Length: 298
Image (cartoon, rainbow, N blue to C red):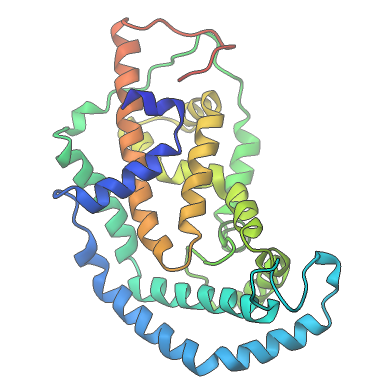
């Protein structure tokens, strides 16, 4: 699948396909009970609070300026009033959070298990992952100081909430003592939530690089790459990582099914890592020569 290196978002589709068809990849048992309990509680919550939440949203929207370009009668002509649409967005986010709460650590375990099961499916041992080999004659210069500060912020509780929340879901659990920042972030992102599709695209763009780096975490660890090597490797392929991360973040932002996409994305990331590693082997053996800095590292 080396040709997929030319358009990395395809790997998200590869991940979905393998999750559905590969007999070696079995993660449903690990998350089944959590998903069922979360959906049940979420359904009860939705039935019991939807009307109340819609009244609150309608009260807020009456005082919300129409500068957003939205009519209170419909959402860009979709036949659904803004109050109903916004309430659906808020409720979807709440149900998503409930499901993730019941999943607990099992979702993280399922993602790691999916990565390991892809290795088994492909018949690869851990020795397949070789040491890092620089593919460029003149690697790009990277600033770890800025990147370290940025990553420290986005991995902080407030950073995770604001940057990784997305339009519909909060991927990581938020402690109770952050209730006020959580509410604040919801208010900040509310204008985006009012826009169908557009809000998803914007928030997916914000999360793209961080999502891609997270999904390739096991690859970097397997190669024992240093933070500097990871930064250079991603800088050499910044457009590839951005496009893959954007597609992955967009899929994971879809209510509820985004949970399953977060697993299939890890599988797709693993398949991409296989192709990247094969390329690394070809450079290490001398079959391929290092490319100039002006060339693309496909």
